[in-house]
Image (cartoon, rainbow, N blue to C red; front, side, top):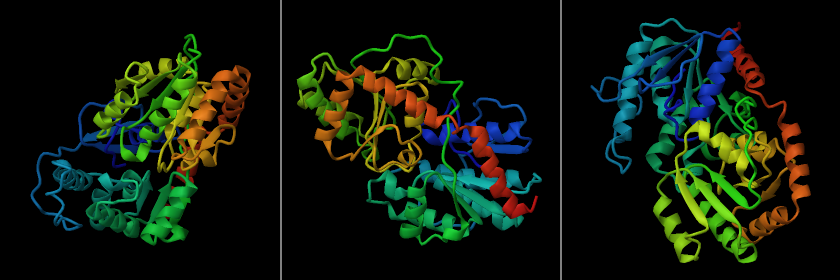
Length: 374
């Protein structure tokens, strides 16, 4: 398994997904060797961890090695090259049946290991460059994703929405794509004893164009004009932080919108449980694992209709990210009618009960078996 994020070194859902699916696979007896570009990580019984240094690159591998070191991503492309070389070197000392890469960050390593070992490559796509840039992809990353999609023996997409995007944008072969949704660990959420605040709206996620937080802030301006006690907590970090702070100030919301930055996982349990409403306003969201975390915390949840999570959760309010007026109306409606919030949250929680990582691990093992015959 080739990983780029892993707790406590996680930025978003990629780290959560990797941790949870590896843990679930290990519980089911799958031997997992996880290669990470850092030494610090949470340990999992039955999982072997290997540290892949990313601070060197000798130029010895062939797959897409040209022209990716000079963009504004800084050292990231150089680090990916180093990871690819290091993972290839480490894999040469291992015995394994399957190579499993996650997103474009580890996909080049997956292709190189496949070339050297002749073993099948599984690629989980958590998002695409089209999603991350709201439709304005960096061509160099798009080409890397295309190479990985073409070269993988089997692709796992985290939603039907993402599957269709891979087919339409990358001409992916539909026959080699399986949709396996993300899941939730119910033991982590909804267990804390904390008073739920009646007027607290919560957002959790990366602060990027893709996430649509500016639309939420504009909606909250309308909410604040109609309910002066309402507060908006924004958890996360990212390139849009400064512009979002400026937007809040310009809208006269400096004392109503609180930017909390990145919050440790153990503190997130309290925030989810304390919030009156959770909103995920994404412009483009292949899945949206934070929506599941909020629902597991029994928090009424409003999600973008442009999210993969909307495919599996029906008992939630779905809004178009650009419709700030309707988003504000739904927030105000839930604030006004607590009984409606209770019904919606309890029904969504019941609906989510079958979405466990153990169930998803079974699907992964079925996918692996199509390539190994085991």
